[in-house]
Length: 113
Length: 114
Image (cartoon, rainbow over all chains, first blue to last red; front, side, top):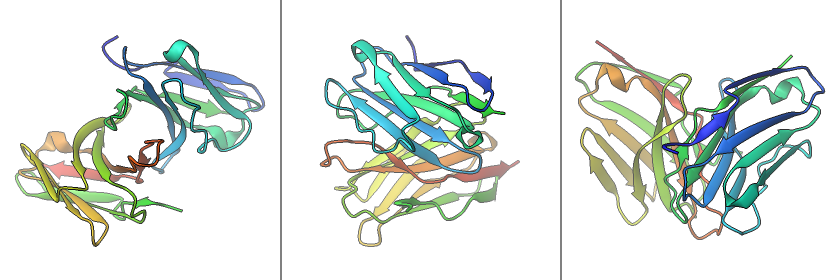
């Protein structure tokens, strides 16, 4: 595709429910990142995939958060038993291997009520 | 612990004047720095970058300066235009770390007044 695509663009969920957020990176990009931006905060790193290497999960805030990347392309971020503090914009980005110019999607705005 | 700090949450300048956005970092291993611009309801877009082997990089109206001894970088926009109004994020990475994740600051909201 022309750019990084994220779905859904908006998600409202009840506290305690699980949610899945999807990211389609730019074709050919081997690196994929997930970030989140809470209200009034900067971009918080969550997880980074690079090719076939083990992902860097050092930013995941709790074990309720997990992500996978199938076939080196599409990625899914899963949040289990959502809490109100999980409300944020979740941003996905991709880049070519060993490039640090990452291209971002429009994000998924998650609201936990 | 903020490794990348943008201490000014907001900045307002007049059209045609210079905008200077500042960023400080604490990790001396950072060797690549980027600026991203973000409009509301959109993802951040890459603006300009600089490697630690340089102290200046210029692209049109945008110039980034890097002072490694002070662990400080700045983005200069001149002349500023109303369309430059956005949130600007500073980011840094350590290319030797093996995981080149970008570490972002909290952003500075720039408003350029006509």
